[in-house]
Image 1 (cartoon, rainbow over the protein chains, first blue to last red):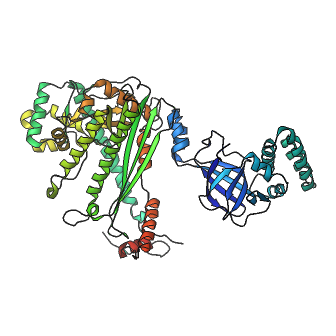
Image 2: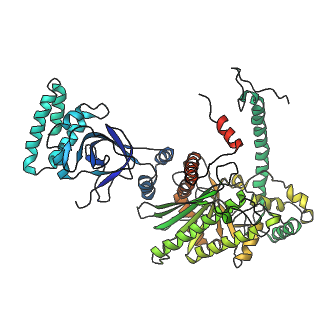
Image 3: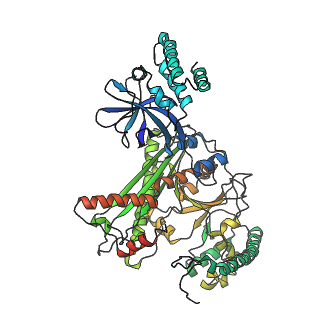
Length: 199
Length: 417
């Protein structure tokens, strides 16, 4: 794609996670964003980049929306008004998975989190491949207490495989599976669940 | 009445509203309201019987209305435009597509206790294109007024709330005219697509009479008439929507029916048989999507509007906008339109049908609810604005201060920890 896809802007952030506000669920390029497990990037001060995985998408409600639902609203214009125009933003939580500078990737926490209103971009396939070339980020996700780690890993690994040419996808998943086997040697049930989800 | 020092059970002072001292009064209030309800119900029965017995707009009734206007101006009455007072009409479905435009305004009045002298207007508007499936266009336009020419009148007094409200009203009707023209242009001038433009409240501007500025209301109505002319040229249908109206225009007419013409005096008009009743209760038997006949308010503002609009006058109907089977049997609204719409039953049908469709979720026009939401300035937002003002005053070398009164309100209004 020519233009990077903007997911939204930062509402609040910390070293280990940040929250984005999005105007709607479909981007201008007609992509479904934000998606669970997607890899996104933000500026983290200077030339630094912050990479993260989307682990929660919340669509909030208020009394007005509840009343419309209770009344059984059917008007498509009212439904689109609620979805696209009312200030009930789509709130997206992102788990920080690594940092970078230029083409360099570091699977460690960034020095600084993204700033308020920083734009967040969906990573391209090339960025996804570069980020997932090494498996060190798996440890960060497995150790997360705020994200649904197992499901997040499954979604992110499937995305990482899909970003690669078809003839490389199976090899990538097998390699990731071997790394997970090392990390979860004492949690075989958990490992089994993740591996099944990766198929 | 004994005035005791404010104490609560814990011995601390300054409890603002001691509810325990109100229990007896509140009980009495409940009993009085029940008694009033019974008396009013009896009067309403008589009013309905009068309407049922003599629904025709007879020549005699017309003479009585004329007499009432001569004796006492009769500003709370209305002129029936049809042949019967109990007319009913139900429109068909509104043509699709059709466009609904609503505008609303909000304000922050000048406050001499604030850190700076200013006032703010915020105009919200929505354009909903029914039948297209697309999201509406919405807008919210804030304006802050701080220049001397805006803030002070010719005698150096700071602008009154009435003045600020009048400016807000101007922006609402102007927003409707702007959007209606733009919409008609976007439609390529296609007149087959109805455009209904709505304001929350009566169409005509209202102001407290001010003997020192007697021409002020005329100026507002002049402006109003100019915007109505724009709406007419755009082939739009302007509507003032009054939810839960308190008016008693038709009841004032009913009072004349059994009053001999020679007994029409200022006193008998002002103490009519049906005071304290409202038209919305009189007409609460309207079926869903049914409306009454047309009436013209006999108001001073309507007279002034006629002089400035080549003879046009505002008229109204009452309509029931609730859905069959909903908990409440009726939701009676007063729908006001200019005379050039009132005299065209098809256009009035379109307006009513569009409003009824838009009231489907909440028994109140969705577009008016959204326009209000786009306009309203809450306390938190006002606080944010004052923070911005605070910063800009500091940056420009000024030391912002609220008044001692405002400062003390902040101290006492903060609550306990």
